Each structure stands twice: as C-alpha cells, then as structure tokens.
Length: 241
Ligand code: BTN
Image (cartoon, rainbow, N blue to C red; front, top):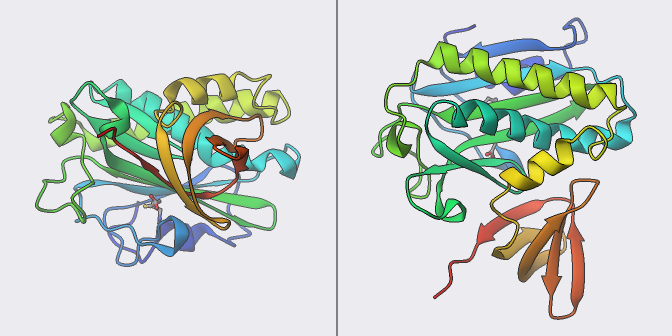
C-alpha cells in the first residue's frame, strides 16, 4: 500500500521482478489511467484504487477474458456489501437503487494492460465518494447505491479473494471460459445483454441490440444488416423513450 502514486497500473506494468498476483494499492493516484485513453479520478481514501499483476499460465489466446473475469469478481464482492450491481460490457461495474440495472451509474472500472508475459489488472471503485466528488454525472458510488458503511479494507480483501478464486478456476480449465463456467457467470451479471446499445469502437459507431457475449468475450450486436461481434469499444445503454 502506498499513500500516493501516479498510477498503480503504471507502477506494476513491466516490473519483471514482481511475482504472479502481486498487488499494489494506492490511497490516491495523481494520474489514474482509464480505458480508451481516459483518466480515473478519485479523491484520497474515498474509494479503492489498486492493481494486480498476473502471469497467466494459460495460452495467450484466452487472456482477453481476464478483464471480464475481474469484472465478475468485483461484481461478486460488491454484491455481498448489499449494493446492487451489474456489469456493463466489457467490464464497467454499475451500481444503483432502481429496478433497472442497465440504467445504474458507473461505480467501478477495470483497465487491463499487457506487457510481455504479464497482465496488469487495475481496478477503480467509488466507495464513499459523494455526488459532489464524482467526476461525471453518470458516475456513482457504493454509498449512493444502498451500501453507506462499507469498510474499504474488508472490501479490498473480498475482491482479492474472489479474483483469486476465479483466476484459479479459469486457469484450471486452461483459460476456457465456457468450460470453467466463467462465461455463463459473466453473461448473467452483464446488464448490457438485451439492451439497445450504441457502441463506439475501432469500426466506428454501431447501433443495435446486444444479444449476447460469445465464447471469446466479444459482444454480439444484432443490427438491421445482421449480427456483428465487437472485441473492444465503449457501450452506451440506450433508454427506451
Ligand atoms: C475505466 O473505467 O476506464 C478503467 C478505470 C481503471 C482505474 C484503475 S484505478 C487503479 C488502476 N490504476 C490506474 O491508473 N488505473 C486503474
């Protein structure tokens, strides 16, 4: 644990000495990284900001599942606090209090970065963050989602335990997400499936209905022109009028 650093992902990435499952936790990041070149901003001690370095023993072709695996572990640990949570593809953690998980706000995010034989999984989670402290209106925290008194250390331990269990299970099946049950558990936690979506990715902007996640972790979107499988992008859940 460090009181402050630029980015826990940056610190671990490329650290050839760090063993599998090394963890770095920071109370505050001055240059937290997000997906798609975004930033992760969180006031000191209001949330969890940490990274886990993994050296997977399974074939690299399956590594794309690791950020989704981390999303499932995060969802499991957060659900146990009493907060209602769901995943937005690929691995945003949504939390809220209403009836419709796909309309919940973003409480957590995951950034996976690879260097050689290592994958660094960085997790940011808003825990006690107040609405005034949140960087954007669409963000939320556990405190605003029905879990006002979460102990951050206990939650961190629970997330790391779930991550350990999921990682071991997945590795036992050689990284096969279907055979290990990971794909099924991901799909049932994923609020994107069944929603009308706008996906912004490398292929431009796609409108359609998300109908599933395939065995490689890609989002399956049904469009007027047929099905499209998307490996990376930013999803917006479109609310019915
Ligand atoms: C996203 O939603 O875009 C991903 C956010 C990931 C943020 C975490 S905080 C700990 C780790 N260190 C970073 O610089 N980023 C990740």
